[in-house]
Image 1 (cartoon, one colour):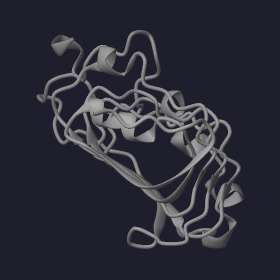
Image 2 (cartoon, rainbow, N blue to C red):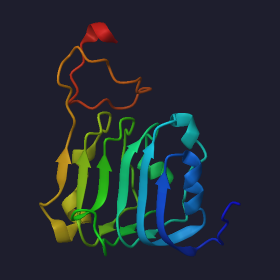
Image 3 (cartoon, rainbow, N blue to C red):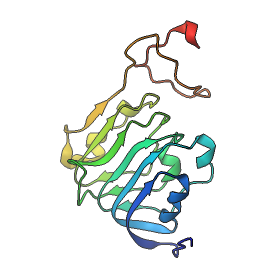
Length: 181
């Protein structure tokens, strides 16, 4: 039985796990009172997210966590109007976390203006671009200078090249042996 909420609903914490279909739990949510965790989606490609977007979501009162979600290329496409992450409850002192997202190319949260409490942790996202062009201290003023942003680097040039980027930015920290393309 699918859960259909009226638009502009206030929802409780949402855990999207294991399957892209679990995103339906966010349908109709304008505010999530609690956290949004999106994690451990192994069997998905970029096409699986073609119609997955939640423009009605404006606010998360705790934190937003993204961890090992295959195929997802843009957080902004999921949440184009997310403006505030309050950080009432944090995930290890962070309100926005993106960790081991192997296909993620952009954060893209253009409407995000405030992280009221907690910092930003972005780590091990091999294709992620332009992270350092965002003034995270301006968005998350309460955690100024306490963000952890570490771009992933390949250990050797012998490792496989990343998947095709379809003309988008390729993380400049990745060393690619041109013979492997």
